[in-house]
Amino acid sequence: MKNWSFYTSNEIKPLGWVKRQLEIQAQSLCGNLHKVWPDVRDSKWIGGTAEGWERVPYWLDGFIPLAYLLEDKELISVADKYMDSILAFQQPDGWLCPCEEEKRPSYDTWAVLLLSKVLTVYYQCSGKEQAVDALYKMLKNYHELLKNGTVKLFEWGKYRWYEGFIAIDFLYSRCGEEWLLDLARILKEQGMDYDTVTHLWERPMNWWRFDTHIVNLAMMLKSEAVSCALLGEQYTDKAQKHYDILEKYNGMPAGVFTGDECLSGVSPIQGAELCSVVELMYSYELLYAFTGDKKWAERLEKIAFNALPAAISDDMWAHQYVQQSNQISCIRFPGKSVFRTNNSEAHLFGLEPNYGCCTANFGQGWPKLVLSAFMHNGDNVVNLVPVPSVLQTEDIYISLKTEYPFKNTFEYTVKSGKDFTLTLRVPSFAQNYTVNGEKYDTDEVLLTFSAGEESVVTVSFDVTPVFAKRAGGLNTVEMGSLLFSLPIKYHTLKKEYERDGVERKFPYCDYEYYPETPWQFGFADTALEAEYRDVWETPFSSQNPPVTVKAKVKEIAWGYEDGYDTVCAKYPESRVGKGEITEVELYPYGCAKLRMTELPFCEEE
Image (tube, rainbow, N blue to C red):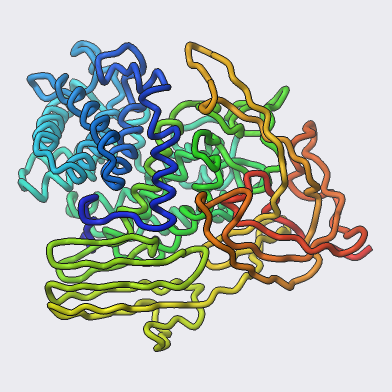
């Protein structure tokens, strides 16, 4: 059923602002984690004594494509060193995880499923056949252990069974061996059936559960798409059915679902875990690849251009475990956490606030987005996410120059060594969509090119800032794929310390963000006006946003959440406007680290 295939990191490269975003990532925490963080630096995966389960594979899942996309020799050598070390520990029977043979039954094999993805992406980036050989042996051994009952799925592995299908599909397309299909059947049989628990998503509880855990659910959305062909089942778009429930009862305006850590409703002061942001992006990338349904591409854009940058500092040395739509401060709670199951520092920017999974995992977001910019199916190419990039294969060269999503003009330079078709996806919010001056009213544009042809294609469309309704009578401002917030100026308090053997030391220390400007406002007018600026060295800059929206507001008595003086109330105490109307500049959500995103319209006294 697979509609589109990914290109490799040798065929697609970042340009413009998205290349700069990857460079910032390479120069910061993700590119240096192996130097500063014990769980990667001293991991059991490479013969050390630190964590030997998900953290090194999580990190490599983003670090490998980052290194190869940037063609950074130093980072590539680090990736190769880690992979060589991991492969050197493979046991004669194929087992590859750092776990003694007698402890295998109690080892959560989520690590096997995760490593299978890493080996797949490593081969796709490096072309090294030893990665495929190791993957084959590991999954063959895994199949035997599952079949004879030595190991079984439980806890994380049970709830993430479908993650192994990326590698199974990859291997089956190469060798077509029947045992891979049997492995797929066993994984689904032992895995969680999420259809049986959807009622739990409708009423968030202060109770930690695997079946309401937001990262599990973000991963789960792609499960039917990646598994149905291997299992010989018909695709029924369960992802949309599950999405509808999650969005209705737990949706956030930035395109993700609340989960701190488990589903948390539609309150603008509940959080969304950063792991869920990047995993939801990956699910949408695969949902499009397997189904060709354009809705997943548009949803992918919204997350990538809003929720992802919002949870990471400008220099990418610090990140949040959870982000809030209405986030007036990032200060450690002195007592009970406002989050349902996260601790009192989950919203701080730092090395590993609350828990270290996001520290290792958030790095996959930007590189995998770049790898999804173009996909192909035979002689058909689709520009899935129009970020600045270049595609170069043996027969096709496409260079895309753009500052999208900040501006909506595109220049494609095409050189063709064969006949092919380029599909341009027309966003649902695009107005006056034109290609070389010709207007289109379709949801996609097909451009055909002949062998030997060289041409330049210019595309443009308009977007208009609009209000969107939210729960509790609140509203947000959107323009195209960007969400906008009222920014709150702030100062930071740097915290350097050591805890549990992990040192926080500048630049990889923790920060609290203290607000300095008012935030208690409601919209006072429906007029909105966009202002376009330059894209700076930091694309999602908290100081110099590439685009803003002017709006009119009035002060209101919003108030604080009961029991807190650093968290705004879920909904305002009063919506009556006070004083004069003030014009403010709304920033892109991803630029506004402290922000008010969901606001009411003011009422008259």
